[in-house]
Image (cartoon, rainbow over all chains, first blue to last red; front, side, top):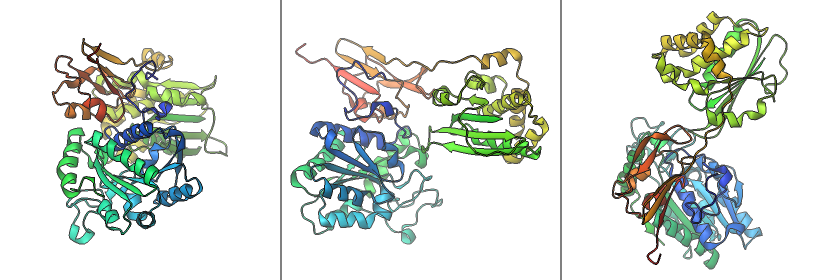
Length: 247
Length: 257
């Protein structure tokens, strides 16, 4: 690869170079989040003691993204698998990297239980308002009047319910030690700080940390790069308005 | 006869295979068709394992192909393991511009390749009738507006001139991508075309509008990549920060040097 012979790198040291270019679509928010996660891992120097758990969905395309231990689990079961691993190996830093379908639909009870138990793990949820890999179906986080392949006339929130607010739910749990934040991919510097703080919270305070990231899906939103950033900043930011550190 | 069709997702590999298998089945051959995809939504590889035989077929896949068609350069590297000394490689990479030359839609490229494959099959002891293939094309693409053009494209492929045909069998080396380096006395801006996917987020995020599309240079997908105007560039590094594929690097000279 052409990365060789460079002093300063544009990519994290924890990247697995042979798997690049990565498998995500052009303009996908996943690659921005993973890049920032890689920088956070570099800064904390935890590459050799990290477990990276991924879910079913577009997040599984990150299975060879990093040079760290990686486990791929059943749909929605990443959080309990990573929690179990942490029980056996308490010195490891455990990251569960899940999509909004895996975290808020099929895996919600695992997520709430882990947060309530104060399992010392970090959960990163990528919210792109739909199920990306299967063709853009409605997810719990789909916005009001958003057109997806299963809501062709726009989502009717009276029938289907309001967009799901994950961080607010985790924040309202009685666990006082958890760290809850919401980031956005169009602010990469802030996102990097939030992910780094979440990992530090896991390591230093031995507590649960949770970051939801508002992400883009140009393929299933059927928009250009400009369109995806407009949708992110105009529509998603209004619906999911509490950003930054929540708790 | 073991045939492996390979290309990018969306080029119509599976449609080609279904048409080929359907036509052979209607002529009472034993046939098998096995699709093979990547997990990606876009830019994934797509392969189809097709076996046509007058005897029983025992296993759907194979390790060495008799005919191998390659439609993009990236695929050539990925299917090398299927080539042995008896494999006929149909190297359709150079024919990408042929549909435009003959006033056909670019999506009919797969039908041209199908025509070449059928002609190649007919050189062996298996004979597939051209009319049967056209019937199958009607069946699969009958509802699409470009039906007649797809039929024409198939005929173009089948009757490909000899000088074009010899071009197919030449071996092609994969593209080499060099980093594009722009320098002035204060800063350095590097773009890596081998990992840039051409999403265009950097163009939108640039605060001074220094980036624009460079239509002369292509990335590994054959799409245009950004170019930088060094007079406008202030070296802030926002493009490096937002780039999803880590394909941009901005170096700034420190004040002490």
